[in-house]
Amino acid sequence: ALLFIDAQQKRVGSETAWIKKGDEPPLSVPPAPALKEVAVVNPTPTPLSLEERNDLLDYGNWRMNGLRCSLDPLRREVNVTALTDDKALMMISCEAGAYNTIDLAWIVSRKKPLASRPVRLRLPFNNGQETNELELMNATFDEKSRELVTLAKGRGLSDCGIQARWRFDGQRFRLVRYAAEPTCDNWHGPDAWPTLWITR
Image (cartoon, rainbow, N blue to C red):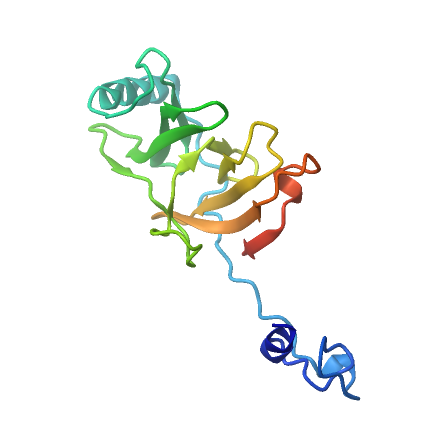
């Protein structure tokens, strides 16, 4: 396995190789590939007006009526935030367990007549599951970074699980960071979990 890593990183025969060390200096190892970039679209969208917010919340409450969710309708929450000058993100809590809440989300037009399409979070790699889609678990929208954050807790302490950050590219949310900690060790939280995927 270590020889495979050396070969993938083109370190075989260099001083930095794990297995087949050689006399080649560390500088002979090619640099890491450049990180892919997902640009922030419309980094400072016009905030939702009171009328827009009320229209979107009414739309969310109407949308809730047709959902098949186990969460009691009186406990469901509708959250809306401006994504761009003409689109908003609407999230509705749908399922809840001891420490994880699953949301459903839509990208909604900000002007009437309101139109929406569901948010799908697709990983750009196979994580060993049947599907590459992730559920919106414990989802929040970070206004500062303009990223949708999901956190699938392995247990209530948040010391294990999967954290992903997604950035809206104008059409869909694209993965910008994926971190996972399979071991529940009561040691560190999501921001310190090993990063397995990252972009700029």
